[in-house]
Length: 147
Image (cartoon, rainbow, N blue to C red; front, side, top):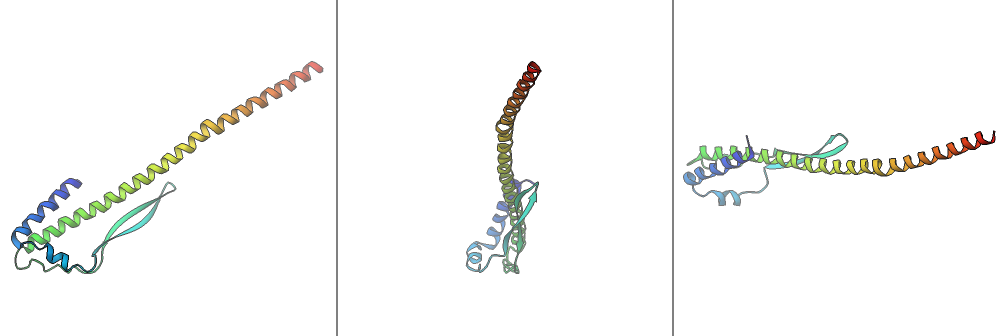
């Protein structure tokens, strides 16, 4: 499922509970003590490049499990599911985007090294080899003319 579809569905799923259960956002905001959904950062090694990998996890119990029980409970449950799906995709997208930026930087550095080797070091070595060959040819011609 595309990110835009998930976000649209999550946004639309907010309208039904607001209509049936009223504006519950202030209740939720006032009762928040600690985040239930957290992000954990890990590291992964891909082709010698350390990439950050993000994963989300739930900590604690759902303190809003009974919110809207009198009215709109089903819509609230759907709202939670839709936003959980959106959150999961956002974390995955952030992980992929960070990996892309990190790999892009590693590729640029590698390309700079390859260019330095190709255009500076190899050119110098070829010049040195040409000089050595010229000197050896001169010595050989001197030996042949003397002897």
